[in-house]
Image (cartoon, rainbow, N blue to C red; front, top):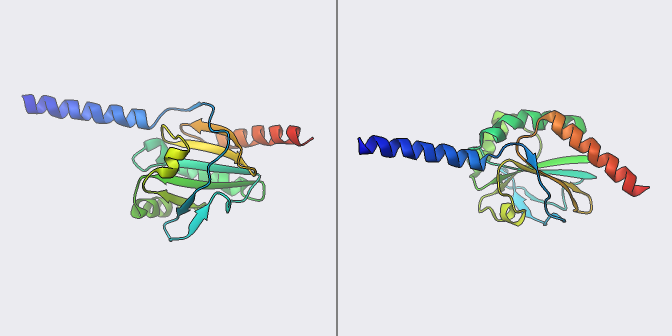
Length: 173
């Protein structure tokens, strides 16, 4: 009987940790400026924030153990396909996992945006990521315009993009 109780407590604890790590949708203020980074993709190509071009850059932190992270990849790909260009770019940063996991997710979801690896979570820490998924919208001057913790659907990406573009247009006048 005690072994059964320990097993039940273990699974309850595991479920609670997954719920904490995979936070629900919400927004909160983030960093003022995005820290530079140098991360590899699964093909051993180096990427830096400076190399990611766009008026608005979307940095998306994720891990495969987070069910919301997995669910939103097709939504992010659809948004990326619609918005990619000189005004928008997207890079996804895996927090703490292996090349094989990142490559497997990229292949499974046919993702064409850069999938970067942060195996030691140093970049995740510099961005003060407290839950996954977490997404940052950054302008070309590296100012963080928005931080979103939780699942993003393509409509959310389009809405945030429009809000940010409208705000940028107002500040450029």
